[in-house]
Length: 399
Image (cartoon, rainbow, N blue to C red; front, top):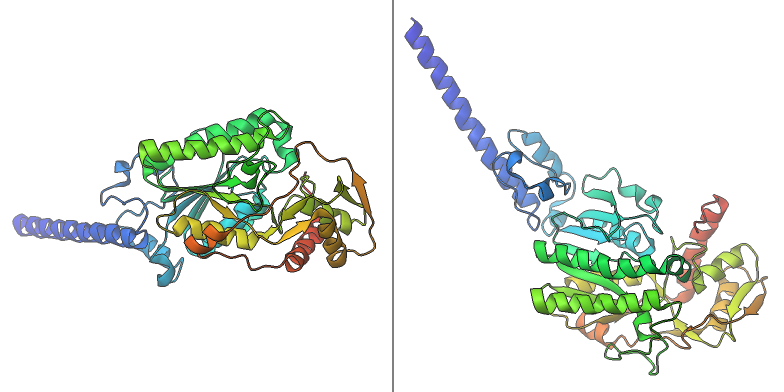
């Protein structure tokens, strides 16, 4: 009697092994279907994963946990899962970065944010903290990072005068070492790389409007140079990685951007004026107020960055900014009209090396990536003022 029982047990075990093998194969295929552009998931156990992949935060989908795979499929509708990417955003807790993260998450991507929180705020991202497609890493980009990604948006760098002058040496290190580390990551993972450079690379321009081919008029030893020259060397580094290592790069030269989540006291003219108007303080205009700027609303800026990242065969830097030009006096008048008409304007000495004029030529953005700004200054300022009023009421004014 023992032999038939033994045979029955062996048959049962054999059946279980075959079934388990089938589930493992199915789980691996399902995972790859749900992450078609991300790192390829092995069909064996999670022990085969590299340390870099293991630390990257990608859900490890091993058999026989079929329900785990099923849950992942519910994260987004099928039309969003189809082109999902694994995207790194440095500086993603900051002003522009957090709006970019919102768009990328809404499109169904998996997003990793790296931010030191020097100027960024976790509260800008709190709506995503419970989403399994989102990961936050608090780290300075001057330290190497080991993750697996398809695209890298490199925004990390202090951008306001108050912030970048606070520690100019660290600002330079961020521009050079931070960009070097992220380009190295792009090289290793074969990720497409986009850096947000700046209109400051043109310095105090001698041509108007500024085209991408203009080399600029920059003071290399002034107080602003840590930012201006830092971005110039970052652009150089990008092209050296492209020429020497074949890294697929994009350079966005962004012009004055404004909108909700700007730091109220960051020293930039739009945030200064809106904050002062809400508090019913005098609007402080530097110099005569005849110097000009072009102001781009943050949603337009984010749209330009995403279009640039996802357009093939774009050569050279691309200006992303609104070509409508205002004098600083005109900006003050618009802020008074939109926010608080009863405030006065006062004049203070001009900051050294402050550009006299700034206006982008966006012909390349229009023709190569199909981008045009759509938000008028008055409309954007109304939305920005609503955000500022709420934060001032709650005592959340930043620095």
